[in-house]
Image 1 (cartoon, one colour):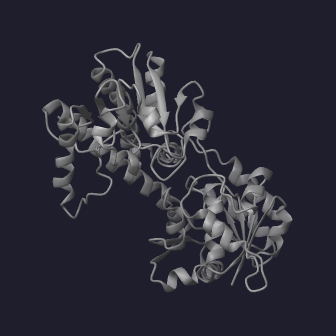
Image 2: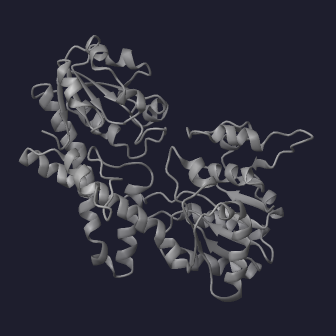
Length: 441
């Protein structure tokens, strides 16, 4: 069992701290946000993530048979007893730029310096521009500690599973004996994961940093490729879902991430590909990733095209029309509304004169803080009542399973735009609905 500190208890850090505790380690989570620490200490997750609160409660039970192995605090001094320190803070996009803002990463490492001791290992998990680890390692080494980079590969909505049973582990370590010691320390932390057969790759700092941004860029490319094909399918009268099925049968391509629709959002893919472009430019390799500009552009065009389809089904104008938006989070099983395509569409329709009601099972509070002028309704049936058009923009199960006959009894106009290509057009049209979707005739 290792004694671990986790610096930064946001989405990544809170999940990582709870997961490490569940693997048998003693963990202290440190964050400057007192409200967040109070919530986590009471086993209340400050965001929606399936399974996290159960993990928090289990790790913080404190009885004679099972003493608590997970604690949270605002005092960085509590990290002094740990020998492995995970840095799990955010790297948002800089205001007005594509580049990543490393303010929080730098601050986290600097806060650790007074408590580090010889033999300690600082482990970066944040997504950072290549070259960051080498710079931070120089700050840490005078303390006698060493640095490793261990990128995370979490999917929101599956973060607990992806942390406890990841599909791979990547270690970025220095050369020589220091790298061997860092690898051994990480192997001890992940002993249970490795024993379960999880693949492990040991690399240099730069490769480990690039793994996450390269993976996200590839996924974004695959999503935008099928959405570009959707644009072509609309022009040609073809069906992009059948096209995706056909090309996905090629095992060199695969069907995952070939779901045409409204495109990607959230706190990772958009900002990570932009930061990737920015860093490539700084290194003089901007032409190597120039294609990512078009990937980003295709993704943003889907939002405008969705607004166009919605305007078509209400006969050319949103003025005086009530539009119901199904979904506010950028993806199901999450309350994350950062760069949410659904909210972007809702905002554009509102600006063009439509009366918008947004419903979502988890993300309404976050959405209201970002777009306070939109209408919100947590109850699905109430949200549907008297709508002139319905837009399915986040594929929560309850929206995928919505019965067209039931919805028809509530709305004023039977028009639905399927922004995620998850509904059965035959079923909806048979119930008297006008059905439209991106990339389908």
